Length: 221
Image 1: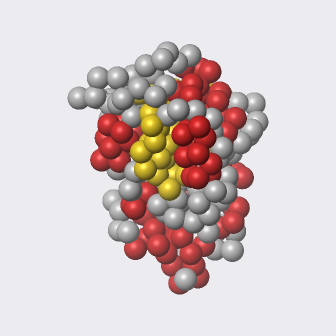
Image 2: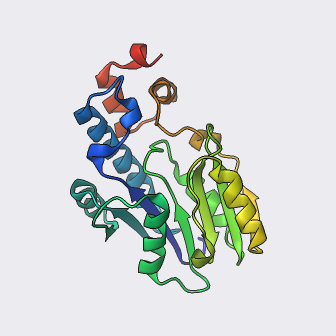
């Protein structure tokens, strides 16, 4: 057991506005349902790790996402409107009022292939004080998982090239940075061709079951 206070944060945008770049292959209702299924898969993993995580916070302005979070036993940090992932993370940090020992694990809601093993590795990587662990997205140099201790030292900079920006900012702040090699988390579902890649992973997830019913593999290829 990892003896520390570690919070998980999942920023979630409005389901109705989610995954607009998948419009060529999924209708509006399908994209909203996809966003919900992905969130459910992420929460499945996070809420199954009580020996590691003291709590899970979902930051959102979406009523259905908030209801889903509560169903899984997560805490909801309500927003009046989507303010972006960086602001959402800072809202979560303010909500938990972290102490010097508290750590923060940020997981996007669009990596339904998340595993408990990835959570264990991230938590172990930031067990020492003043440390950060980070995993890269396969495309655009983004960040698909980041953990930091103490939580208040995290300066979220999500967007293109955020992996390198996060790494450099942590080093400049005097944090020990560990790069996590988590190829299973490198894919986020954002573009039509990502759907085919995700389905090929054959995950036992709600997201895989939903996308399999949508019959989009041929179009996405």
